[in-house]
Image 1: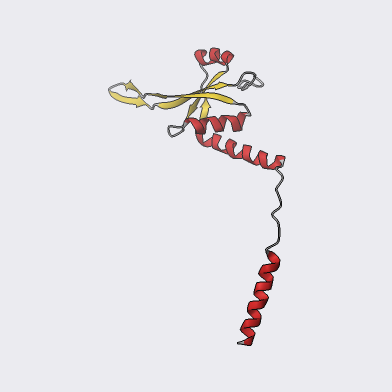
Image 2 (image 1 turned 135 degrees about the horizontal axis):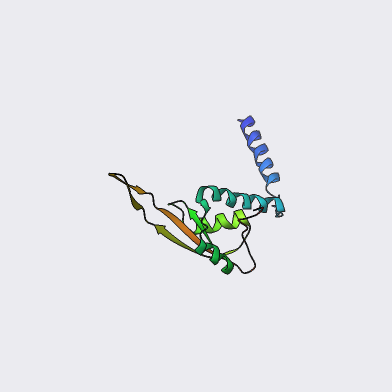
Length: 135
């Protein structure tokens, strides 16, 4: 029994020595913020399908409004985080529209073109997304 009591005393001494340690504050580094940006950019490949460029949307780019084709399950917050992470811009507003499927006739057969979801983003003044780099 004396052996067990000695072990208990040793364990209590070890616990007493370990307790007075103070927690050190962790400094935020650029590497950590870069990792967070990469996490949001990773969302972009799951949410964004492609930029939606038509005459109408091209004219809206002058007003800092950009349109993207997104996945059916994408939410406004996911779209916002994806754009901010991928293009390093600040998004002020996101509007989402479900575009309905269209029927098409192929000879005697009737089919349909799949519908999709598109998101229109309003960016903060001064921010820009370059779609046509090198063109």
